[in-house]
Each structure stands twice: as structure tokens, then as C-alpha cells.
Amino acid sequence: MREIVLDTETTGLDPAAGHRIVEIACLELLNGVATGGQFQRYVNPERDMPEEAFKVHGLSADFLARHPFFAEIVGEFLEFIESAPLVIHNAEFDLRFINAELALLGRPALDPGRAIDTLPLARRRFPGAQVSLDALCRRFGIDNSARSLHGALLDCELLAEVYLELNGGRQPDLGLAQNRVTSVVSSSEERPRRPARVHEARPEELEAHKALVEKLRDPIWRT
Image (cartoon, rainbow, N blue to C red; front, side, top):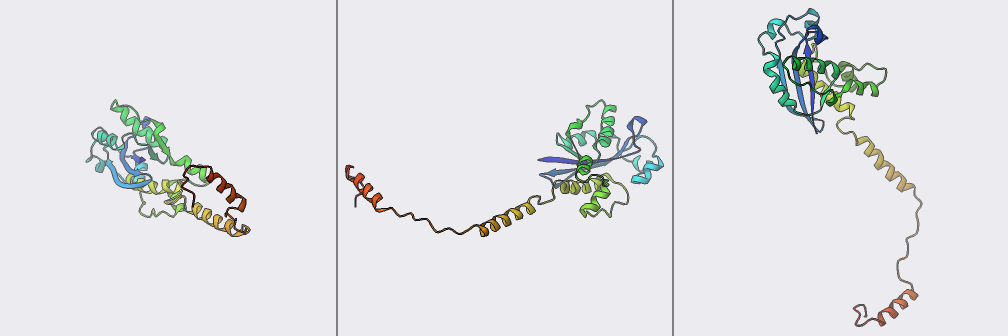
């Protein structure tokens, strides 16, 4: 199954307040394993960069001014994701921004129903615990030391590993399979020994068979 891990960086928290996407990244998974296929673009937001947002991702307005507008990369983006499910941490946030950008271009919105949101997945698995991407990396022993600032592609790579762990890890059935084998061996050893069954024909059965053969015409069983 093909899935796409997706993340964005933005100028703020609300597209309705005029905030825009400044980076978008996608990572391809096949049957839960990264294939190496990826899509990443910095985007000129056509506006200034608030200081609060700059502290999060470190992308300045001057840097982004040298990159394409969303309208210039939207075709590549949609072609890459195709109709695959989208694995996103806090999907409502990213899809709200992507759909706002698509609306500005008169394009159809992405269906929220195609999103696999790892945030509620993590909350169900670890109720009451922190479920930020950093917290989940610490919980699963995933190295996130390179994440001094948020970056969409790096976050996709980390989220792909987190998603794998949320689904049981690289060998989700290994422990269970080992338990099953141990159980079978254990139950076999504890089962009481029974004498072997006798399968030889009794004398009366041999006589009955002989009588039946005598009634047949040229039987091949006659010796």
C-alpha cells in the first residue's frame, strides 16, 4: 500500500488571518517502509515573516523570496501525492493550510478523510502522555538530535519512523509469534503420553475381506 507522510511549515497558525505555507514536504511509504521517494519545496509566501514563526523554522522572508510561489509547485505536489492516504501529525492544521492555498488557485480541496492523523493515534495509545513529535521520538528511541529547528522534510522522516512504531514496529508480529511457538512446545511437553494405537487388521476382518474377494470376478487383490 502506498502512503504519503506529509508536513508543512507556515508563517503562522491560521490561514484565515493571511498566513501562508513556506515549506511543504512529502515522503513515500510502501507497505510502511520509506522508498526514498520524496517531494520537498520551499515556497515564497508573498508576505513578511513574523518573528514567532521564524524562531520555529528559521526561514526568513529574504530566503523565501528566492523560491517559487505555491502556484508554481502545486502541480508537482498533487502529482506526487496522487490519491494516496496522507500520514500527518495533527492533520487538521496542515490540511487547512493546503486547502487554503488550493482555494486561492481555484483548485479542489484535499479530502480530510484521506488523512491518517498520528496525533489521535498516539493519544489513544498513550492516554495522558505528551504526544508531540519530539515526545514520541523520545518514547520510541528515535534520534531527533538534528531537529534544532522545525523542517518539513526532517519532520516527515521522523514521523515516518514514529508512524511505523505506532503500528507495531518493523516486526509487529515477532513477539507474538515467539509466544505462540513457546506455547505450542510447552503444551506438547505437558500432554500425557498415550500408547500407540494398533492399526493391524483383526483376524475376523481378514476373514471378512477374504470372503468379499471370493465374490468378485478376477479380483486383483487375490494373492
